[in-house]
Length: 164
Image 1 (spheres, rainbow, N blue to C red):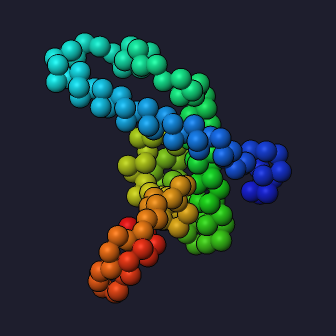
Image 2 (tube, one colour):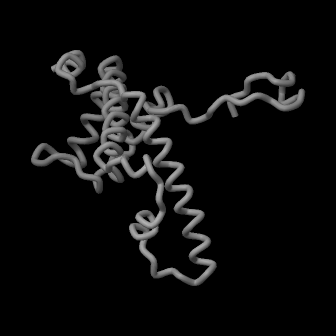
């Protein structure tokens, strides 16, 4: 079964733009809850649960974000990462054979992989890490403009777009 089979059958679809907007709103909500947590902790009211704090905040549209929606966003990035990992392994058969041999040696054929197996599979971990390095699921660094001209190994002009 090839990767194109999954694309044609709708398994690997891009994340809708609305999902990114909702995810951003959810992140803002969580940051606001963290501020609320520290304020409540300072006042000594540690017994209030996160759920009651969340429900007490009247956050309008942010409350329309469902857990299923957040799971969808996470599953899309997971599916895309798996797709890239499989593509890399298919393009590098020697690496794929090493991963297969490592899985056969530590897990065997009698069962599927568990989370606890990842500790015993360092080569597979390296493949996943390399996949994240080559194809990150989301931009890790957002561009910004430098406020002043400076030298950081090379000249960076004022208002130049930087990625650090």
